[in-house]
Image (tube, rainbow, N blue to C red):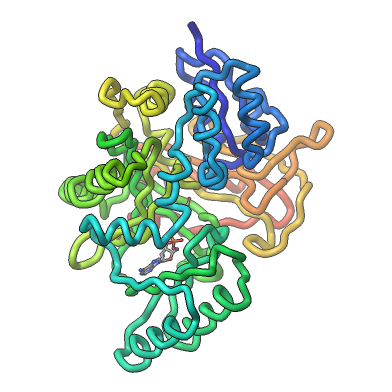
Length: 427
Ligand code: AMP
Ligand code: GLY
């Protein structure tokens, strides 16, 4: 019988997941909560917020949802998967205890240290004075750079790469004293600054079993040449040339499998997608952070390259049957360029008309991040508005195609980076 699936979330990542799930012959009914205007083209959107655990649980139960696919981290950390499972419902995503890999940097760093998973050297502090003394010793005396990280979730703003002790001390003051991230900053991690190329690696994990998906590179800064403040991500490409077959094997053996095994040993087996943010250093790959979900906008390039069925894979993970599925990818490349609102990642306006999507060539995919319908007009409804994706034989062709098509799209104040995937092309 055809399956009923619920996608939780409302961004470009969730549009991509919903688009791919909708193409599965096994999926009969697809819901999204709350979704966006693009998701509404492939799923029935229901007005339940992604953080409304009780509302989602009730909806899944009342509609006999066979699989709930959780996009963002907050509901995972809040225990949505635990709540669904308590009702006998299957969900794709880790339990709250397993989602601590993302929800607590102290937990993930200590796990990595205990199990020998390569990561930056670090120390944990819950009081300002010893943390400040550590900063003075390492930065002023030894002349090193340090990274200051709030323990908990801080909307992507809880990491400060400090090049001076003043910067690091300031970050400590903000997190530990002024509590700008609330309880998330009560504890901090101070870690060694790693140098190298970053790559986002995704793998399906079902207890001890690990099936690598693909790797991608993100572009976090808002402006070209990695200038300006950090954003949720302004573009991505896959595959990542830095991620060679040898490196993949090393990451599987030194990072992904040991982490999955460690979680089992710790009594909180991980089920879902494990996103490892890595730095490829001169000494080899090291973990910058783990996330308990798919990346955004990395999903917009990884999933369109997947040639096997996504529903089957996610359903198998949720059911603890990952060994039963084969996952395969096209031998091709994908590039995503995010079109953002003027002012993003700061203040921006919403409700501006979007034009031109109908004029795009058929080889282009558009995943909506922040859009909605207002009367019969598609309008902006977020900082990141659209992800424009090209799939082609090579990254170079995908870059050319995506940038040739973007000028057809218009909304007031639209801005985007012109250098997505440049690093891959320069290699
Ligand atoms: P995170 O939110 O942990 O991914 O950190 C945000 C960004 O900070 C990462 O994508 C890296 O660019 C940078 N970062 C985090 N940890 C380190 C580190 N130990 N060394 C250098 N850069 C880092
Ligand atoms: N693109 C970065 C993230 O999803 O966290």
